[in-house]
Length: 302
Image (cartoon, rainbow, N blue to C red; front, side):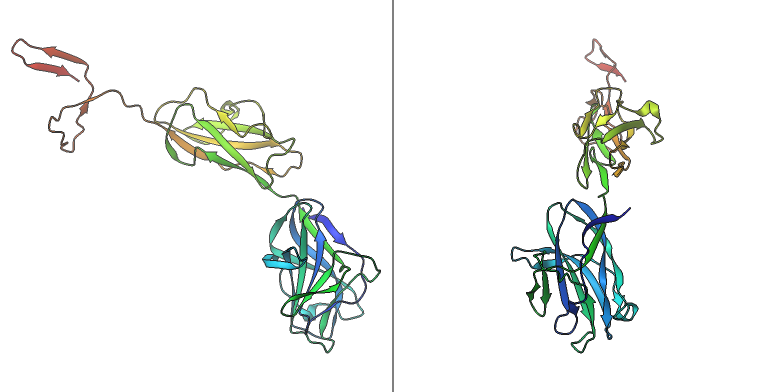
């Protein structure tokens, strides 16, 4: 569930976006790593404009938004925003959440379409109380400093979903030795203290029971593999999964189920086709008994 992660909740009217200043940005420094899902901005509408959209951007060394948008919200029609003097807290939800890093600066960029300088714009509330904030930039072909303060904003997000991914053996792999090394990774932030894993392995199907548990609880911060030391048979299919037994944040997701097939046991054999040109039949036989007769004839039993 999303909770409020970063914010600056000070602001009064000002910071009109539209016309010659179609985009504004407000910068913030993250206090943790999380999956940013939406931003809430405070303001009202002056006159009429077509629409407004919010974005999340990286920030370059010049303190300006850079590159392509990391996340993009829905487009909100201008007519749906309350007119001055009615203040509105507007939620801009990103189509795809973005995983922000801890102690990293990002920019919330707001773009208005169809506004003009004849008081047809979106007023994004700005802090006019003095003192340095993270800064506000506007663009009209290039980014320029508008204020050293900041707009009113909230960034809402959730703890990043961490997923166990199986890496080796790969799914449906064949020719696996009887003592394979099972390996996995944890994506979305890696292993954390309190992550405990259950590793299951079962022959022929994936209907795991307690009998298929390979060991006791595995500490994910100390282990990312498990060596099988016996019990597997040749030419057999096995299914395995690493399950999240517990985690401190409750956000660790179990892996999918993979399968692999062990190698085929091939006993020693000889060819009965002296020409080395098989006819399409299996020409490999296992010798059980050889008898040599007095007339130099050789008889063999298969």
